[in-house]
Amino acid sequence: MQNEGMQTTPAAFDISAKTHNPNAGLRGNYADMAADFTVRQHVGDYTSEEQARWLRLVARQLALLPTRACREFIDAVAKLDMQRGIPDFATVNVALNAATNWQLVAVPGLVPDDVFFTHLANRRFPVTVWLRSEAEFDYIVEPDIFHDFFGHVPMLFTPVYADHLQAYGHGALKAKRLGGLDWLARLYWYTIEFGLIRESGEIRAYGAGVLSSPKELIHALESAAPRRRPFDVMTIMRTPFLIDDVQSSYFILESFEQLHHDTAPDFTPYYTALRNA
Image (cartoon, rainbow, N blue to C red; front, side, top):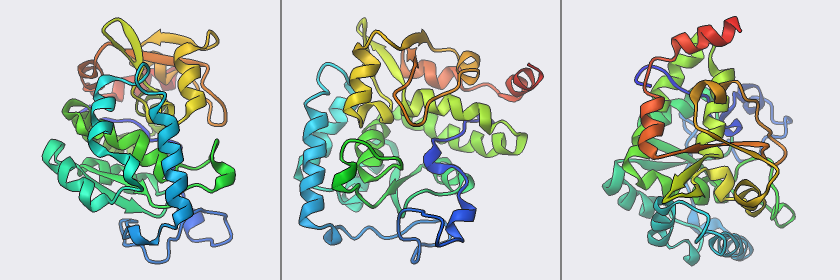
């Protein structure tokens, strides 16, 4: 994927029109953002209610992880110590930079495709600063700091995964020019968001959308309803995904090296085949 890539989660779909329309219902405060859509994280501004809600969200997910999350995720979560409260990105960046040369950047919410891809290509992961309301405790439409941080950040400490994500950022910028993002959205969705991996003969989760949702985690690994299929790039790009329900299909990696290797080729011929089909 040196020159090719994948569409990101709907958290980064093109929202240019919304950011110029204050009545469009966009979550987050975009008033003080920089040109790259970053803002400052003011850790002291989180209320005691928000801190308590964060701790409840973390506790609920931690109880489900031991037999369901991949080893890399569990190891990183233990080091991040999220049971102390909403993380300070600046503090986390010290450890993350030492581990994989990545850093977190705070964003007000949804960001345009090009902005998201450019951050990833430069080893920066955008993390939303606001936390869901109490009414959204069990389900939220847009990614918040819990989804972005708890779901995505631990895997950034795994070098091969982190390298893949940077390559994805570079490739996605080209993919957008080639008109491939509609197909590549599916590849991101079934890996970074809802990916499963085989570990010592058992299926475990590594996708952020699975690991940050108790319902999706149980459904993905224990329900008889969904199809669990071998990882195959072209099959994935032909498979639609569900935005507002648990998934009906999941794809299983044999290793993170497979993810990096199988998405390394130039995807231009794939787009041609998909377009012709």
